[in-house]
Length: 186
Image 1 (cartoon, rainbow, N blue to C red):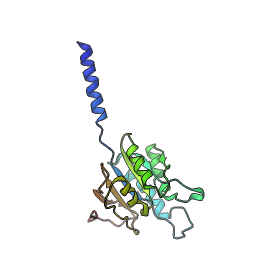
Image 2: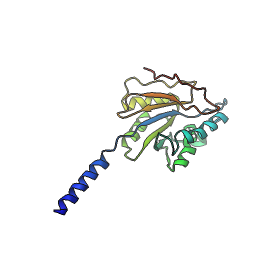
Image 3: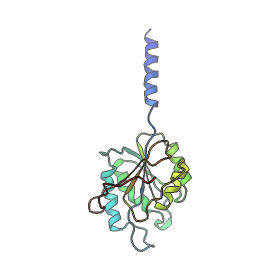
Image 4: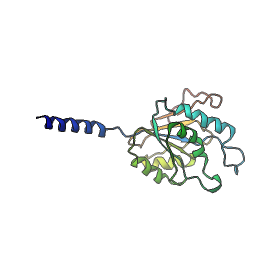
């Protein structure tokens, strides 16, 4: 009699554990860059933003980030800004930034998102021009364009990853102008 109850309890616990909700994806652009196009570092403002993200997405935040993706950093630091943007946060969270996807491969990022079966949510740090490509490979029929003049937007992309449901400012103190009326593009 006890054995069937143990089996039933095990099955119930396994069902609850396996019914985990798919992760939400948060898309951000890399932090600000210097005026010199040859300079692959973050600007002073960009460094401040990278530090601000430690609070926004940190352990105490509502975002519950457990997986971070940025493009492969090339020789001499090319395509390295997205990595530099999230590296301080990744260290705080104790996660490694996944950099296996080339900078221009939205398909690779979409595959990595779909393949992720760990706990928590996903943060993507990328170049603004490739963000619509990532959305398209995730199934969005009408990907949004990330504004060229903004570095502060967080795009929320819940499962099944086909529609951006929220766009909000990071509101980093001393960097961003408050955007209380920010509206999702349609």
